[in-house]
Image (cartoon, rainbow, N blue to C red; front, side):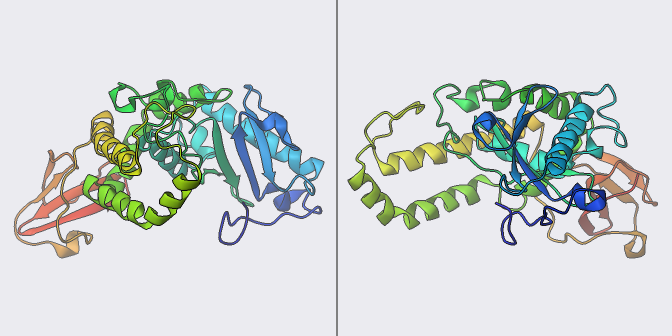
Length: 328
């Protein structure tokens, strides 16, 4: 929902029908069930979209038309011949970071409904459409008989039986698979997550902590609804107990992190203790050696070279740091 502690976007009034005021904020959902909602449209490529904000009892025709027009512009940019161009392609209309984070969450969790229902929002006087928040995980974590076992697939779940509404499978393909500029950005985001809690050890411990916190609630829940030994629609297996269902999730997490690393061509490298930035003013004796995150030496010399933006491991003398280089 739109709100200060939820999706914090510009509030719209019935008077916001022109100029900057008309540009936001909006929240819509790429939604296969949009036709059941009060305010919705079908994009030029057949994708159904529900407009959730402005709300259906206050949105004006100008605001509805603007949201539809902007979505079609974003969609057209993804499917255009120059879609990968950083200036005129899809990045002109859609925020790269939030879309890729949303993608990685969907794939890490094995969520077969990731592109069946996608929330996006747009701020006022901001050309970018932001993707999120993530939601709808009842069929995630290997809980869908159409895609089970997710980790046995050779490709992403959205391409291996996942539910995609309208043109979304091709939409995501254009961004994730076809755009050669996307892979480095995906790896950067994944690397940052892997060094900030997305590890097998941390996630398994976190799952155990949640299972313990829910112990009393689950006992009462399954006393009222004794279904742990029953097959439920879409479930691929019946573990037979609460502890068994927790094991299913934990086994999936262990397998999926390894699967994602392989799919992204990523190797986890422990970071040095010192994460501070290294520049020429911190120089010590000896040449500078720059490694990529896979541990390959890509430069040795005295002056910081021009490199593609991204994260690097830099050693000079006895000093080792991880640095984000933002210039080209």
